[in-house]
Length: 125
Image 1 (cartoon, rainbow, N blue to C red):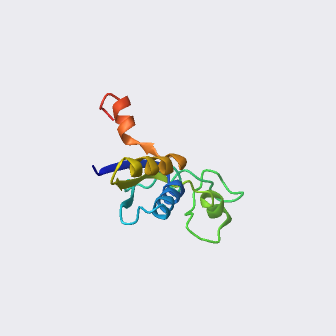
Image 2: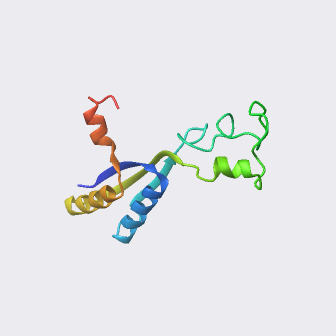
Image 3: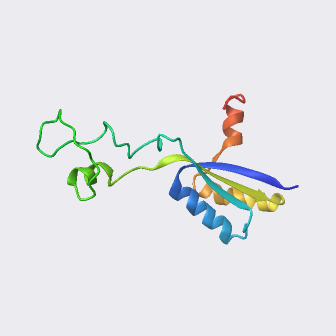
């Protein structure tokens, strides 16, 4: 009986690698990849207000826009942005063998099984 395996990832790169491995293993056309982010941005990183260094050597109470690409302050604040959010893969597995293969691939890349999270949270997750 076909089953949809739903997994989430904290990091985009892990989800993308898992997707590529699933496609290489023959799950063509049965892998859906989506990114669910809040309109305020990712959970961590690249917010432009109130979280970075201000002017170089200037008054720390004076903030200037950090939007110029060549600005050293801009690069300091945004060069190592951690893009996090909810990266979700849904894999359609046709039988038990495919389910096992898909689960092994997803686990290898750090997938989070939302069914296990929900069960472990008394159904409140």
